[in-house]
Image 1 (cartoon, one colour):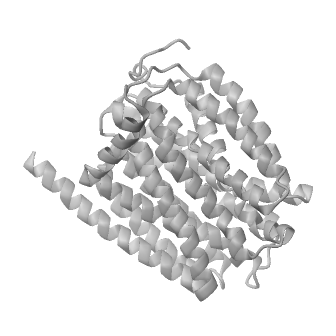
Image 2: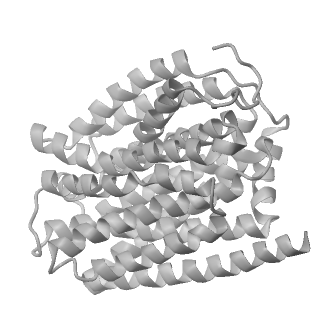
Image 3: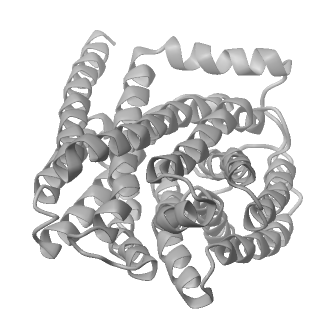
Length: 404
């Protein structure tokens, strides 16, 4: 490919091969954040640390992701994107290998944090794909990429559990992932088009502009807060689910726990439909329905310790809601100029994953002090708060429209 501008590709947008490669890359990249989740119990035993300490690995990966969102993703507006994507993918090979070979818990924590930082290549790819698509199908294109991202998040747990069960070692999943990312780097280099930078500025000016773009627009601010709350609910659930499934209520092994990612993946497949809906329904209205589904999922999950059916349905509803809410939020922010999209993505997703990090810690605290009931209570409070913010944001958008 020899394209050097950043205008959308003609008519139909990116080819199917490019789009599917970007979706695959997005999923494989973000999966690195979640390989550890079903393995926390085994890691705690091997390194002789508490369950609470092991759960901090999830928080570290999400904090690393938030750092990468703020400091690396904006470079997608400043540097040639294909080169940036390939370089980050190759560096992630090294961090995954370091994690696989970690001799001490501290080294493991550093490896997971660095993998989290580099996993933000997924968000560079989301903004990249949005820039390649004409306005009429941007929601569909972003929905396809987000399907890859959500499948990566959820199937990471399945792959992690199954590979660990097959090999007897949690380290094997990180070694396998490193090999996969190496092959992916070659594929990305061969297929992605070259795209010239859109923004010329110093690095400091670039980062400062992220804060200006997010804080200066009340609609974007509200989307960032909704994203933070929704990712917080998502992280609180998946961090503590391992403890519920490994505990007295179910007593499942790591391999079986990992299979719950397949249940969530069924929900993630709705991301493509959500993207199509945002091309037809105003996303600031659609998000009220997705957040309502979030709240309903927690009502189902309240019965999870007693009912496997309630747990499975709750997982599906929660993951549908998480994917759809994120796509609705991005549908709003991608209405801004193309030259701002990487920075808006950075600001929005940084808030979202900071919310995820807080949700992981809060979920672990709620589990420790209130068991599964405490986790459900936390999720309901966050869901109702997000609905209130969305309602306020809807009134703001409608007032703007009426004034305009």
